[in-house]
Length: 377
Image (cartoon, rainbow, N blue to C red; front, side):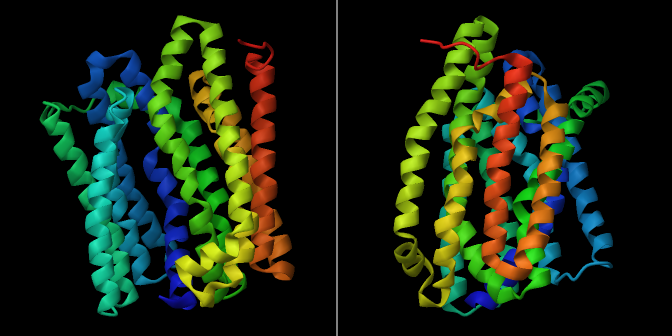
C-alpha cells in the first residue's frame, strides 16, 4: 500500500476499534464463566448474548455515522465498522472455550486466514484500490462467522434452540457494565495513539508506527489462545480448592515470564532485519519503533491471567477504575510526547502505561484477595 495508504488504512481501523469495544458489551469472560457453571442454560445464555451483541453492533455503526459529522472520516471507516454485526457470532467461540474445544475455533480462523490471504494476494497483484482491502475486513468477519456456525452444527448443536431471555439479559448487563466501560477504556488505550498520530502528524508517520505495532501486537494473540484453554480450568480450580487456584495462577505467570522476556530481547536485537523482510526498505523507520514497542507486550503477556482473576473475583469495578486512570494517562502522555518525538513519543507513552497498568492491577489484587501472599508448592 505504501506508507501513506497503509497509514490511512490503520487510522481508519483504529478509529473503528475505539467504538468496537462497545459492541462486545464486556460479556466474553462472564459468558465463559456462566457456561462453565451452568451448562444447562446454554441456549438461553448464548441466545441472549447473541442478540445483545447484534443490537449493540448495529447501534455502534449508527454512532459512528453520527460521529462522522465531527471527525475526519473516509468511506472505508463505515465498511470496516460493518464487520461488527457479524462479530456477534463469536458467542460460539465463547461456548467452545467453556468446553475447552478451542480446536474448532482454530480451524475456523485457519479457514478464514487461508481464504482471506489468497484473495488479498490477488488484490495486490491487480493493484486494487485501498477500499478493496476495507471490504476484506468485512468479508473476513463473514467467513469466520460461517466457520463458527459450521463447527457448532458439526458438534450436534443448533442455533435454532437459542432463545432470548429478558431476565438473563438484565443479569448479564448488570454484571458486565464495568467491563463495557473497561473495554472502551482499553481500546482507547490501544488505539488512541494512532488516532492522535494521524491528527498531529501525517499518514506516513502513522504508516511506520502501524507497521511496527502490527508486528509487536502479533504475540498478544497468545493470551487469547492460551487463556481460552486455561480459563475454565482456573474457574474449576477456584471451586475445588483455594490452594489449587493460587497455584495455577502463579504457574501461569511464571511460565509466561520464561517466554516473554527472552522473546522481547530477540525482537529488539533483530528489529531492523525483521522490518526489512516484512515491509522493505521504505519502512526502515519502523524498526526503531518496533525495538521499543515490543516491550509494551511483556507485562500484558506475563500477567494476562490477572484480567481473568478480576472476573472470577468479581472485582470488575476496580478493574475499570484502573483502566480509566490508565487511559487518561495514555492520552495525556501522547499529547505531551508526540509533538516533540513523533512516533517514538507514542511508543514511549504506551510503554509507560503498560507497566503502570499491571502494577496497579497487582496492587489491587494483592490487597483484595491476598492471592500472592502465600507460596504454593
